[in-house]
Image (cartoon, rainbow, N blue to C red; front, side, top):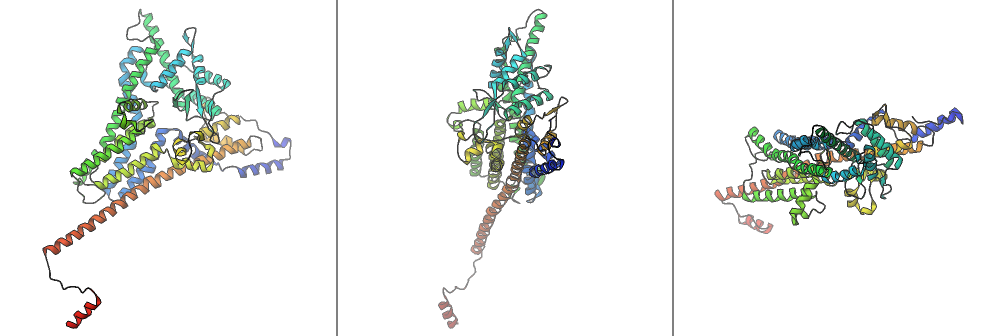
Length: 579
């Protein structure tokens, strides 16, 4: 608990109350419901799969479905099925990857006494962790304390202030505490125990002000603090299990040839399984994503008896060769362009497909049970390609291109640019951005990263000497905010620190909510409405043209002598005179 200065020891009580009231009036309003709301926003912010699905459903799936129901029930049902199935498919990609990893690695796991499918690390991370394992040998044995000390000394967190670079390392005292935290738990699982992870993250984020972006020093191997710690924990467990298997077999007389004794060879075998896991794990969500719209089209035909685009009543599908070529070219072009964004140099997909293929395969490797952004890009790109292929006429093709490409760009390229710009306007220090990396709006949008609620709060907790743990469990986020609020209301030197943290949390909430509102209003409601308006305009012109042609046909088929119209008032008067 925090030791508080009692003003009654040095000042009259009334003066103390006046000062506290002044502090309260200048504090951001953080009452019960607001604290709970902050906790919810923090959860959505730090749980990528849940957060992405939440935003996708409430700001895209639901409004788009409701808008298309205004066209017709069939249009609404088709949109609802297409959009919701995409959300579910993306969310399930991690679970499918876990299952694929288990199937691919089962024989290898059994013979070596490990669970390679639970080591959610790509090949570069496995190599780095392997070198840390070897560096942690003490007297020929893999020492846990040395391993964790080397690990935490090897990572640094990204936290900028005023646009200046700040890859922050963890000081020696905190590394010592972290090593003690990680070695005091029994190594009986591949997943870091929840309480252990919470304690470690409090120390790491409180020390560096970073949590969402960490890297191994001198490398480009990045991940969240939680992800890297989890991978390190699973690697340590892999080594322990491998040694246990060897010792068990030695006691029985000999080590079977299937057991790999050398750590380097063991890790090589695990890496081979990771490549196979990518192929098997992504095949299912990609296959599902590409089959949804053709299935959707089939169900609509069964339900209505018509195979035309549901956005235009009575429309028949365009079966011309020219249209088939058009949608094939568009689908391949847009789909490949989306997949190319995975590459460091997107042009390579078109200039050196062999090299690009290897890079894509490497970047599609699983880094955790939650799909990576690169995996989302690949699945989404293939899904949109199939939607364009399945389009029934030019109207549906145009609507799909507009709606899906803007959704892709907003989510996976621009990364919620509205919330970033809002955060910058409120308080530039709640966004990580290194000015030296680039200048201008585009660089800011594509290279900046919003700080999480925890990256704002935990450094303040450390300064205020508030622990995020109580009785071995992590306190709910709202309670931590409440504790900071208490300090902000006191007339103590720490009040300013607390007030600044609360202010930044408030602005973080505003920015995040504005991003959600933008997605719902513009992408969920505005773009579908724009699509409908464009389609109506196009169809209106077609109808007018068809009506005009029909009228001309009638005239041609039924000629009727018409009196000549006079060319001017003079001729009109002359005609009247003759009559």
